Length: 612
Picture 1 (cartoon, rainbow, N blue to C red):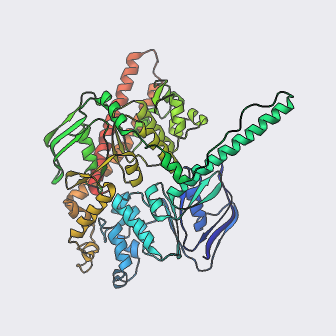
Picture 2 (spheres, rainbow, N blue to C red):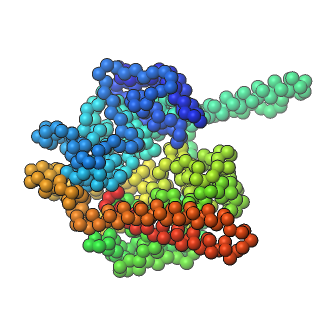
Picture 3 (cartoon, helix red, strand yellow):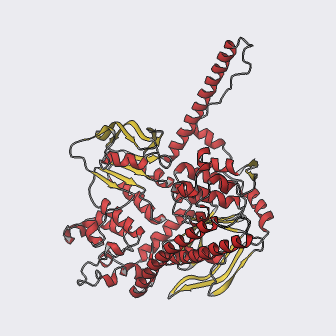
């Protein structure tokens, strides 16, 4: 295999840390490399340096003559004034790109619900991301570098992308580097892994599963070496002190193959015991949906649904964007009344929801992490052991110095972990997780999963992360055409059903891109989301009104955030002994927060309908 691109002693220094410290690495023909590491350790920086879009502080990047590199960054450089068609295929003649089976496959796989002749500026954030990915994939590259390519893709689109990347080059040709927290995707497309940590890049053979096995063995060997070093130091200290020889036997470790180690591991959770504990906390009834129907405008989101959720059930919910998952969750929680049928919620049920947004932390913005944790109990039982909130949050990657940081100064990933921790400290017995993997690296996802393994309650999970879905839930359900359908075969069965439905769709590729249609029939601003609207049963006029409402809500939410921050500042000036004034100030904050929450819920509902 020939070298395509490499780095020689590359160094990148940021004001607070050295991200890359004399890194030397090479990319060979046929490489399929997954890049993992903690948030902030330099994964994206490494990609941009190798792609040539970021100049390192030291060292150099060498590229073989003629080698082309395509980079998908975390933000796009699309022109909002251009059409989707122009941004994807440029000025190439239609007969040229439309006759290319590979281009047709990419457009069908990623842009089926995106108006081909619509303006980029009128697309949602998720649609723009897919347009940017399609733009990159339709071109020929020797090396593809993808930074979080699965963001904004549903389970079916992620499976399509994995299949495309496996078929894109013949064996031994091309090269792929991908940064993602989607562990199923890493296992599916990667043949080797790079771990970025402490300024260095450490290579591992095999996909994500093999990488984890090798890390376990590496950590075990490091532990053995450290124990040996400590034994030597103890003997040295004893000799220097002229005391008796250090006593104690040398620790012995059984060296097992990774496969044997995994085979000896017990199941990740004792489902029967968790259900018994959940019964004690919840009783027999949790949530009973009986013949529930819910319509939004002309569209039926839930159609005569009966679904019983019991104590200790761990259910994953799958569905395409716009299928109605947010509506389903709101009805399950009792926030939204059905048009027909009824929802019975057990008397002992205590809900908690980890939403995609971080508004739950706004009330703590000026507080230090230590102060926030101090408002909770001092001891919690986790997996049979008593832990303090400080010990629990340390398991989620917080260091002692982070405990003194103000909540508003935390990174996105740290806020996400704190949000998750506070929910667990509230001790709910029904936990709803809506895309909990956002902003978390693979190590933190593993820690979150470990905490959930010992959590005794009912769990409902909505995520496009297939690995996370299969890891923490026991059964999966799909929301399809307003019905909740059990999937005994899990995500694989969902993908098979989705492919079967797509095969029955009579929409042709020419219909989707507007080929052969009169000018303006598909490309006018009035029909900018025609394909998606028609598929969802929403008229163009309704779609425009929904987007206007979403924009209005975002402006109102920004205004309310300013008012909440001002009210919180005013509260600090109130005499702490004046309980009446304190109560009035807090009531004002609560009212503003409730108004903001309602607007955010409406925005999420509309975003789901328009496919964001």
